Image 1 (spheres, rainbow over the protein chains, first blue to last red):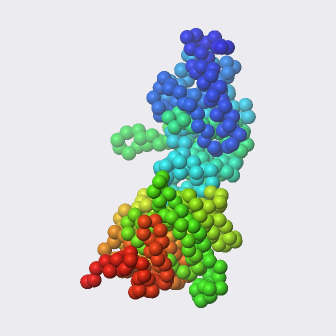
Image 2 (image 1 turned 30 degrees about the vertical axis):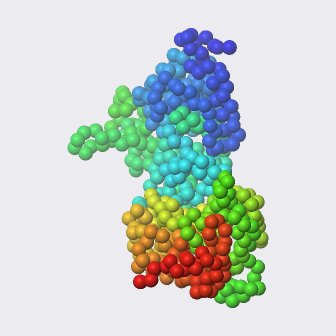
Image 3 (image 1 turned 135 degrees about the horizontal axis):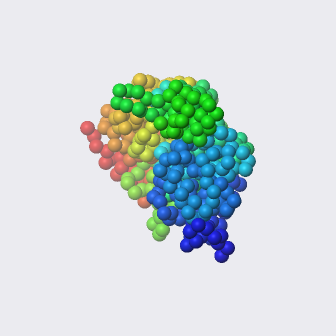
Length: 297
Length: 267
């Protein structure tokens, strides 16, 4: 078996054995051929708990080549436990170069965000997906939801949005907002904020979605339509906090709200740490930003 | 729809549903055997019989929930006649949510309990492509009024409704897309008599008003007396007697029908 020599030679390149990678690549190819369709695959036991990105890690492992440069983000940040662990995992098992800069990465594994910076055709974005079935909470039977996908019966998705408007006066679904891929399959874009939904469609990068526990892979090929579902009189709105980033001053990026004391003080910071740091490096500062401030406040 | 003209000209019209030799077996035993009848537009057919006589099996076969082992079911859809047994699943499911409706005995089977009343009524509209929230909501309010549920309860979940209200909500949910053929499986089962009476009154009104054709399965002779134009009596999976409701109930011919009629408690 043509195992490339890696930092930890006890493992095959990128942890998974070649047969498993082959199986996953087949699922990915099928997913790319049928955008939004959930392809079943034989998810492997990974050395991390379900819910920590086992699906994303397997897809990344199957896509990695030794020349790749990997970036891992969790809620947009490169420095959270999950992101750091997965990055280290591939550094050890694949020996690939890693980066935190969006523009330098060739593969970006992400949890809950799409980077602010526009992606290119040379990049692959891998999502970690907890629940791939967009209709799961409306129709618990998998046999039934498969049938609904097969026959394109998506009225139920609008029932969910109807319920939102009836209860909250607007579509209150703010993350994992369902989209229709290439005019056919309704898919769950993983729990990204709906602010990121417009970036799903017509994106230059290949977008792959891996759900480890649910054993599903799906994909959005480059330059594919992904339309957020809505009503004629309640159109889709990509919402975000109405604030500028307190560190870099950006008013276009998606922000996290951070509570800073028990007196009600709070600050808003870009969730994409690389984007925020990049702006500060270029001398752009927000309300609380100082030149040598470390990201994350 | 041509409600009045339909019921006036029943004889001239082709049957809406034409069933011949319908058989469904459960292994060696029969569910229903050799059932044949015609249902004309605007007509209500009652099916009575004791528990286990095959009425629900028959209804499930007609509505496409079960696959019959033998026989033909011809349905005259808006797009022309079709055989529901050979219909593609896509077309059959489309029929099910546009031209057909199915009222379950237990409203919990027919409603989405986690979704508000308005969402329940609106689901069929959205399933056939309605994408305007305001219009869906107006239609839902209108239908709730028609089944005597106050519009103020449109955002309540069915779990907050009484049994009778749940059943009326289920009826609203089914009729909102203006179906032509309604299947009802014991629509009044499990309701107390005063609530039953109101529901029957409502159903009778809606059926006449919308010119619906309906097949009602029940073991309650009072229900068919009020609603059905024609009656079919089943025993052991076979039809033992059929005819006009009043005729069958007032002058039963078959021994079993006589037993059934004489078993009704008189208060």
